[in-house]
Every structure is written in C-alpha cells, then in structure tokens.
Length: 416
Image (cartoon, rainbow, N blue to C red):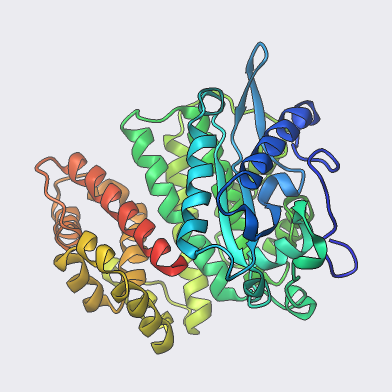
C-alpha cells in the first residue's frame, strides 16, 4: 500500500515465499487462483483480490520434500472485495466456497498441501474494519493481485495506526488454543503427519508471542519486525518464571527460524513440546485475562476459566452473539438443545466454545484419564456438547471434535 491506497501488485512483483526458490511456483498458483475468481459467477461484483497473510509479507512457508516436490505449510489467504447490489450475497459465498473447494481438492494441489481461503467483504465493509491485528497487517502488507485500486477503500489510516485492542490479542490466543487441541488430538491418534504438527506448533509459539506483544506495547505488523521487540520486552516483564521465560524465548526463536525458512522441520517426538506449549499458554492466558480484568490472580480451577471469559464479555457482545445464533435456524438445529442450554448457563456460545477449548488444552492429561478430577470435567463438558463414549481417550477425542465443530459454527454465525 502506498500513499493511503492499495497499488496493483500482480503475482511475482513482490516476494512471496520465505524461500526464494519457490517464488515462481507461488506466482503460478496465484495467477490460476485469480483466473478462477474472474471466471466465477461472482466476477461482475469483484472490485479486487487482496492477498493477505504470510505470502503477502513474503514469509510464506514452503519446504522441499525430495526431488522436485514441494510442501505448502502456509495457507493462501485472500480478501475478495466486492461491490454490493450486483450479485446476491449467497451467490458470492457459493462462488468463494466453490473456488476454494476446486483449488484445494485438485490432485496436484492436495498432494502439496495447498489450502486457499477466500473471504468476501463489501467495499463499504473495508471502511468499517476496526483497529485489530488483522486490520493493521492488512494496511501494512496486503497486496492487490488484481482489480481496480480506485474501487477499493482503505481502512481509515488513523485506525491502522491506532493501538491494537488487547481484547483482540486475547481472542487471537483463544483461537490458537482451539486450533492447537485439534493438532494435538490428531498427533495423539497418529492421524496427522509430524511435519504439519511441527509447523502448527511453530505458528502457535509465534502467535502466542504476537498476542503478548500487544499487551506489552511492542506489537509490529510483521513477523521479522516483531521478533526482537518481543524478546526485549519479555526481559522486563514478570509474566513467567525466569526458567519459563528462557524456554519460551528459545521456542519462539526456533519457531521464527522455521517460519522464515532458516531451519527445517526435523522429525522428532513432539509430546514434550506440546506439554511445554500448554504450560506457557496457560500462564499467558491467566496473565492476559488478569490484565483485562484488573486481577493479578490465576483463574483457579477449570470452572474459573468459564467465569473469567463470562466476566470479560460485555452485555452488548453477549446480545450480539445470541442474535447471530438465533437468526440461523439450521445452525440452531445443528447445535442441539443441550449445547444451547450449556451456552445459556455460561453466558454465550462464544464463552462455551473458548472455555471448553481452554479446559481441554490446559487439562489434557486429566481429561484423557478416568481419574476423579478428570472424570468430573469430562462428564460435564461431554454433557454440554452431547458427546457419548466409554473409553477416556475416546471421550477426549470426540470432545475435541465436538468443540471444533461448535467453534466453526460460531465463526460462521459471526461472519453471516
């Protein structure tokens, strides 16, 4: 973006991959993606396609897997800016989902792990984007791959320079915790490959650091630019013990090196790193939620997690959450009465989802056992999400899956 406007930046006119060896490969895939958008039913209303995320920053992670094969670990994230009143909202959504499905399921793309995500936004919606991590990085790094620069509004520059909300940073942490329980569950069941799990852990350490950087006042809209400020700020904070702080910085540095292509994803046992990620994430979650609530104490037992999340949610946010749920009849049917009742007890669907995700992550071993404390947690959470299974490990797996399904519905409600 230059002079407060997005300039046209065709694929290949700027760095895309952290490893320059894959520049042409990414350029070719982006050109094919743009062609699909231009040929879609939604094309008449598309003002432009903005590339966001790692590839827009030149930090996309792709690794060689032997011979001439590649493995895409970073997702291709795009914001498709559309004009209202030309094509129906439903048709736009159908077109975006069809492009995603066709691109991601293509044989060669599926083999390389290519995953495209297209998010449609109205031109006037660009002006309503609030100060957030996404907005900051959009204004700083997004690239207009195709379209008319004059037709695409830029979020207010005063907002892009505004202090990012700590609530937004805390939301980032909670979303990554939800994603992490999925990866850990697949790893425990030997259902996923170790490279994908290792990459997920690297992203987790980086985003955990990103969330902390907002609270510590040193956030920067780019991985390279935020590393040193985060490490320097941690040296003057008392968020973790000296030992835990040293271990986190070590993991953070290694994750940055992996993300930027400076070191590989070697095959190794990840159980120790998963446990360490839980330890640091739990301490971070307690500290950040305490900062938001003005409390220096930890959340206490597992029920305290739901209590904190409920306290952080304003009445307006709660009403908005319920309004989104209630205007989706099919979603209500999919959630079921038990989940709806459980959401009402803790305040909202958002509190139920994120609270359950944190409990699964922070008490992973207890939930996977048949001991008293873990049994109590599991019984209550399974009852809330309608999960039934006999074996403890099976209950944990099904509970994780139910939490992820409910989270995905929550996100769809919010985006509707």
